[in-house]
Structures are given as C-alpha cells and as structure tokens.
Amino acid sequence: MPLIRHFDLSDLESQSEVETMTRAVLLRALTKKKFVVSKVPRSFSITNLSRCISTLILAEHESGSIKAQTVSTVVAANYLGESSSISLLLAGSGSSLQEAAAQAASCHSSVSEVLVADSDKFEYPLAEPWSKLVDFVRRQRDYSHILASSSSFGKNLLPRVAALLDVSPITDVVKILGSNEFIRPIYAGNALCTVRYTGSGPCLLTIRNTSFPVTPIAADSESKKATISQIDLSEFKEDSVSRSRYVSQSTQDTERPDLGSARVVITGGRALKSVENFKMIEKLAEKLGGAVGATRAAVDAGYVPNDLQVGQTGKIVAPELYMAFGVSGAIQHLAGIKDSKVIVAVNKDADAPIFQVADYGLVGDLFEVIPELLEKLPEKK
Image 1 (spheres, helix red, strand yellow):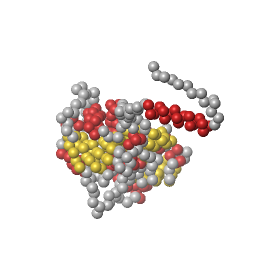
Image 2: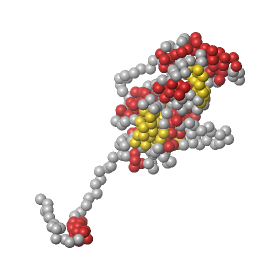
Image 3: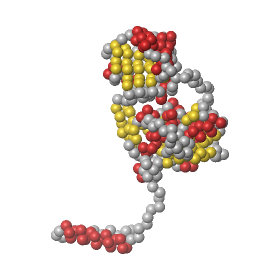
Image 4: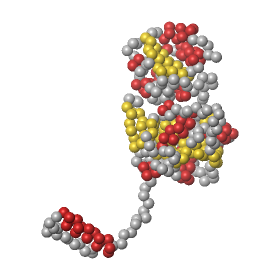
C-alpha cells in the first residue's frame, strides 16, 4: 500500500515559501520514481495531419472521357492543404476505361496518381461494388480525405462508403477553409453552415462543382502527367448476394451542352402547359447554344425527363446566363440557380418570387415573348 504524506502549509508565511516547499516535494518524488512512456498509439486525427494530407477522388467518366465535375473536385481538393497528394480512382472495364485514365493523368497538374480498377464487376456504376472497392483501396493506402462530386453518382456512393467506414460524411461543400473545416448550405440554401470535422477516420466530402470552377488550360502550356497504376484485384471480395442490379441507362442524344456545366441555361416551368409548348424552350436553347432546364412541377407534369430538373433536388447550375420562363421561383428552385451570373425572368405574375433574385425581369405572357425572341434572335452559327 502506498505511503501518503500530508504536509501542513499553514505555518508558511508567504507565497514564495509555499512554492519553495512544493518544488522540494516534487523534486524528491522525481528522483525516487521511474516514469514509463506509454506506447499506446494515439487515434488518428485530421487536425494533426495538416502537413501530410492524402486525398482520394472518386472519378466519373463516360465514353472514354473524364466528366467536368471530377476536375472541379480536383480543384476543390487543392484547398485542403498546399502539400496535399491527390489520387484519382477510376473503375470500369474495356478500352474506354483506359482512354479515360489517360485523360485523367493530364486533366489537372495537381493530380499525382491515377488508380485504375479494370474489372467487369465495375462495368456499371452501382454503389455496392464501388463502395467495396473504395474501402479496399483505402485499406492499402490510408487516405486522410475521400472526395466525390455532388452528382447522382457521388450522392449514391459516398453515404454507403461512409457507412462501411463508420464515419459521418459532409455533403454539398461549397467552400473549404482548411483540412478539417468546410462550409455547406442548409435550409434550401438560405443559410451557410461552417462544419469542423473531428472524426478519427478519413474525412468524406461531396463537392458542389459550381462552387469550384476550373481554370481553362492555355493551349501552349505543358501539362504535367500523373502516373497510372493498375489496382491488383486478386484479393478483392464483394458480397456474394447483390442487393441491386443494373437495369438500363438512358442519355439524351443531343448536341446541346450538359446542363450542369452549360454557359447558358433556358428553363421552363409548369406555365408552358404541355409537351408541345415546351418545345419552344428547346428551340430558344438551340438558338442561344444553351442547355434546357425545367422546374420540378414541369418534370412532374411529364413535359420533360427528370434529368433536366433544376433546383435543390435536381441539378445545381451556375451559368453565365440563366433564363426562366413561367417559373414562379420556389425556394428549392432558387437554391439551384443562385450562383448564376445573370438571371432573366419572364412571368405573368408581377409578385412571383423569381423577380426578387432576377437581374432582369419582364412581366408578360411567355407565349408572346418566346416567339418574338425566336423571330429576332439570329440563328446559331
């Protein structure tokens, strides 16, 4: 049983005498006791690794090309830290995968490595095999951050990865303040929330690509090429019983630009009343060289497919010119267009909320305005 000694300090007259007595007791204890340094490893912490950040980006590709939102995610990853190491993960099968990997190697100068998982298991972008792959790669390389775009692919995949790793993901990041501090919108974009990640595992983020524009590469500049590494999948195991199966994938065969990255977006609302009338929006978009968008009400009414929906539950857009015809301006829709450079609104209702955010507004009948625009605008060359 240890010996406990009590010291009576009441007779000491000054604070200096108390301090002298305390030093003497501590010195005597230090000279008689041996101290053992604990070898228990400390838990991993993002805040302690600001100088050795390694980031894995889940890349999206189609027809042998890297999608624009992946490059925007790479731009966002550079804000995590100056010494951040960035790797792209591509999965799929066939020659198109290798073509996409070659393009990914030179898509941005900050990419240091491109990891390629070539297997029929990843022929389709299903979340189940992809999440297992991400966990498989992470165990081998121990990344501090895992990023994906806030696209349908990223929103489907990253929560499943987070569940496997038992961490909480941070979604729809619009600004990165540091390796563990981020800003994301809340309340349908009406407020911004600053989030600090304090977890012990890797930090998982989905990036809103409209908040991280890609700077065009000069034609005469020499782009740095990253190394391309093939992932050894000999020890990769997936669930024996699949809980989902690939059915089909449909894409619009059109020359119009992609809605998420278009410089001009022409959107129609429920006021167009029919599929035939909505073709006026498509003709106007063709003349302006823009993409076609729609409100949720127009999509629910069956005027256009749901991949053209603009808003919080659809595509987030940030074009140089956004034109809205027959759009009232619901909160969910405004959340998806607020980063547009110039907003033009046409609506019969002078009190429509869309006019509160529009740079230019016209109170009028769209069935009169659109035909007049089509008549006076020159044909696209």
